[in-house]
Each structure stands twice: as structure tokens, then as C-alpha cells.
Amino acid sequence: MLIGIAGTHGAGKGAVVQFLKEQGFVHCSARELFLEVLRNRDITPDRPAISAVANELRREHGVAYVVEEYVCRHDPAQEDVIIESLYTMGEVEAVRAHGGYVLAIDADPEIRYERIKHRMSETDMITKEEFLKQQEEESRSDDPTKQNSRTVMEQADFTIINNDTFEALKVEIGYVLEKIDGRRVAPSAD
Image (cartoon, rainbow, N blue to C red; front, side, top):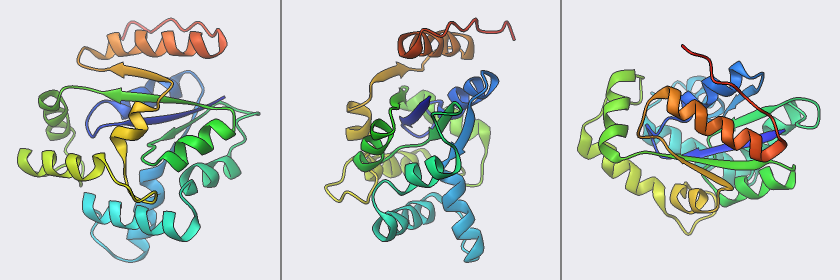
């Protein structure tokens, strides 16, 4: 099975990945592909740099670069694969071409900003104004190689609004898995 995750910054894509990994999914991270390139070039890995290298790789290798790269590494016919994060319609189309599904994760902007402040990753040390500006820049584009998160999310097969607890999120993910392939998942009582 192949699931591509789309979503807004801080919506909980990582939490979805965490739960799906517990269910045996292989995690494939677009961000890690891009960070590897930045590290090799000795470029500070902030969000604008990640976006720039993502756009460059899509121009050079095709708009579905991330999906195709990971499908070469992990056959979704042989193992359960989750690709985090989809940002272009080319990536959505590639997931579907490989028989997969797209899951969109969103949350209220206030909640998302609080989440990124608390996780304190190297790309999350920004003001609320910068956070909102970056989200706007990534949300719509007519260029197929650039981030277009809102359009991608609008085309998702499933959408979860993650304004609640991790337990509530796990229940929602369980519903999605059941709809996709009848898989029943009982969320753990962490």
C-alpha cells in the first residue's frame, strides 16, 4: 500500500507518520531528500532553502521526483509505504499511478504555530508572521515544480482536521486505513 501525506506546516504530518510506522509502514521523507542535498552543498537548511532545492530537483528530475525516487527504493506492492510530504499535483498523480492514496492533514493556524514552536526543529525557529508568510508562499502556484499545498490538499482522497489530541488523530487514521483496505487498527492507549 502507498499513502502520500499532504498538509500544512505543523498540522501533524509527523504524528501521522509516527502512528503509521507503528503499523508497519516504511517512512519516506521528502524533507530528508532535500536536507541531504543542502548538507552536501553546505547550505543552512532553513525552510526557504529547502523549498528552493525541492523546486530545483523537480525541475531537473520531474514534478513527481520525490514519489518516483521512493517507489524505486520501496515497492508499494511488497510493503506498506508512506511518503511525507506531497506538495505538487505531479506528486499526487504519481501516488495514484502507483495505486496509492493521498491523505491531507490540516489544523487551525494558531494550533499549528504552537506545535512548531514546541518541536523546535532547525527550520521552525521563526516568528508567527514568518510562519504565516511561508505558508502563504507554499499554498498556491501555477508553476508545477513549486509547492502548491492547498491545491494538493483539495485533491486528497481523505482529509483529517487535526485540532484535537494524538489519540483522536489515531482514531481518524484508523478510519482511513479501514476505508482503504479494510484494515482495522486499534489505537494504543499511550
